[in-house]
Length: 339
Image (spheres, rainbow, N blue to C red):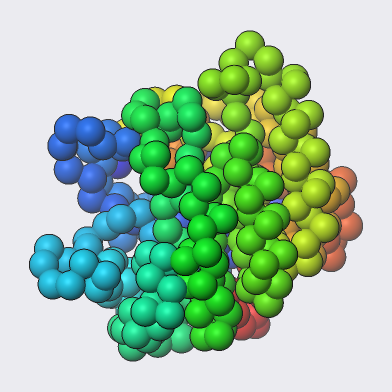
């Protein structure tokens, strides 16, 4: 990761925060990748959080296709990422690097289209990480306009409606695991249909369902926002869906930048408030949680400015609601015990 930017002073610095969406990676130079080369491992994470001044108590590691095994059965190669994340969690849990517990819960990846054959794969992930293993996220985001400067795999079109995918989702339910979904706004109806089809599955919608400003919505941003907000309202009627408030610092039209952005928290609060308030109104604080989505979102602003922006937006809510948004909903979703 590039040199850390100068940080803002943390607002409300003693407020405990669970960051439910952090990645760790070592992106090497290679053609056709949606990320620029970037190293962001435990040392970089620790320095970033310490510099921010925010009181992060725990984080959830979310898959980013890192450290997959180089050989072996294809369906088991993603075990390498769970093992990697569990190693980071063990380092953090030693207490040698401060009180925060990073990668305290792990959202790994596996192909839900395996259906019932997914069960032994998930059992292997649980065996690798124990209670830290909380759920699955797989690549499901699809836009006809492409993402991060590349066309999307056409095989992902309609994936959330695939009966095989739904069969795998039911295995998650049987095993008490959750499903994180990153999609763009054109897929929100499919998420709702999945929630109806597997009503006992906890579904976590990442990045507020990513409002689209490219493709058909280019030069029609206001209309696109109305379309997105309508879909968010419909999705929120499903009680088994929760939403992560963040991921708005990504530019989905080009590769994820390794160069840090310098937007201020005041600028971010103005820019992000409409989407975040829409989601909180639809889901309520009992099913909504702030997320950093770092390091992707560092292309817009620092870690500290990102959390300051959330704190500015959250000032209008009660203390109990703020506590839910900053940690309690995440704790319930990922089974994290609070002190």
